[in-house]
Image 1 (cartoon, rainbow, N blue to C red):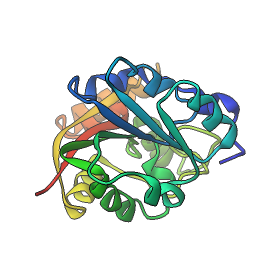
Image 2 (cartoon, helix red, strand yellow):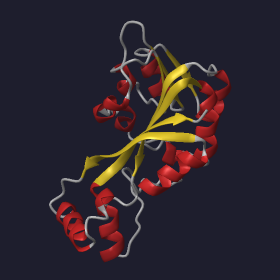
Image 3 (tube, rainbow, N blue to C red):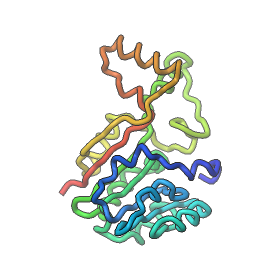
Image 4 (cartoon, rainbow, N blue to C red):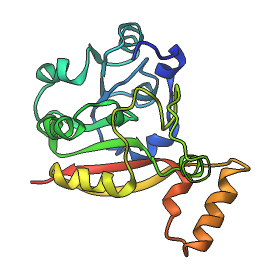
Length: 216
């Protein structure tokens, strides 16, 4: 991931704050970048941990958060305490993992009994992607966004639900976020839904925000 522009690691993602329970006292962010998202959660009595493979960003995050481990999730999993976190956050991280199913299973042991896994996952059925596939017959990788060339996995709302179920989680909520505002792709999405009786509403959203609790 070192090919990324440094701005990639500084994302704040304020739209994801609403999915973090106010009662959370121990929060872990996987792929925390420079720590700007979790820094918004810092307050008295709250521990904010981070895991980040990009060393420069990890060192920046360490100045803002309680504790930051440098490395990938696989590298650091053994160093994360069991049954410790109220919330584990993965903002646009799962798609970068070779085996995300194994990873979210492994993270269950790090969550408290009532803990939740909060994720933002890109939606491959986003209107821009569908438009290009249907009319341009193309699947072109880019330097960012949904068809980012560093993405190993691609998800729809349905496959996100299946992944969590198969991995032993119960989804508490799943919502589309970051709606398209494009003068081209928004009308396309509207027309598509008119023709198909509103059955393709998920294509308006760039990502799906999910809150999931591990099964007993």
